[in-house]
Image (cartoon, rainbow, N blue to C red; front, top):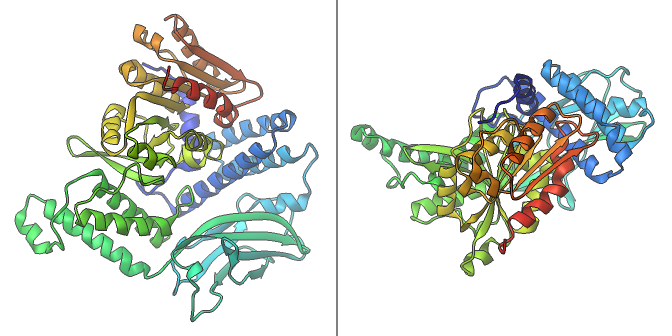
Length: 516
């Protein structure tokens, strides 16, 4: 059993919770939704810059700033946390102080009223305002330039002067209001906001806006179909008959539960909910319709042929379910055709996070990129303070995908690292390898653990350093066959996953080798 210091649990609960929490499964105020999204966006911008600038000195300049960001999270000073993320980005670029005009421009955020729109009828509305208060006043000749892009195509550009706060816009983005080109229909587009001062671009804010045809009617049809099935499931046959189901209710499978999960997400986006990350809502709507058709025809939908990422609600025994995000590698169809199997990597996020954290954060989805390149199935369960029922999840995943049960690895960060150790302590025979990053603690000795390869990675500035060392020491007492441990210099809690990913890649590749 893992024992965590109280401070570690609280701090990372705040960090992950405010960065990447809020997929609609709890109610939160609108201002908190926007703050979560903005913090997540700034984190992703910083992580992309980190990848592009491998200079150790440049990265070291960010350590103290990221530490201050953590303290700001801990004190609920969320705009201050955003400011520290911006300052860390500047520190990566140069040891010199940034231009005050650049600092001012990067302090701004764009709030959209809605991110899922009807392509024929809806305008893009929102406002521009500071996310954290800059010291500098609004510069002369400052303006916002908005452009909607899909591949090499773009709509007309909106230009708004910045003279006072907020800068409100209500933009009819269509190139031709009476004829919307196909390229701008049923697509997840990029809305790019450029903050200019005296004609020079100083900051870029990019978000996803999804444009679909017949939004209201399509969502209503899906919701009504699900409602009729749910009514038919009711033991009260009279209530079920009054609902007049459109078709016989399909079994309560992962496919059906996942349809409800995604329809509810799309309804939230249509209402104007802001979640912690950008969702490909146009793609999700089209897939939901295809999934509904498959259910009506009695066909399976999800499986190894459906390459890419998806949000599933796994059906578990005793009418329970569990939300996961899945990534099927490009070789999924080939593996099925040849009767082969896929290694499985289960990614366990930190306290307060969601299934999106390992895909969109943690080094801009660094682990997801590794799994895609190596041809491994990756699954991230949504989890609170309690551990997900991993053996049951594995059983259901194996029903859907050709999983190699001899090649299952756990990767966890912070509290997720503790959950990984708890899981392997309970069922060591299930797992081929374990990676614990930025977390650890004391583990109840069990000799079977000696046969499971472990990689423990932690920053030397991480508040979880002591727990990681305790985990290493406890495993060493078991005389393990393979135990790797590394303390990364000048790395704190937020950056450890990204900093350690090359080491994680090599470790997993070796541990999941079929010939091991």
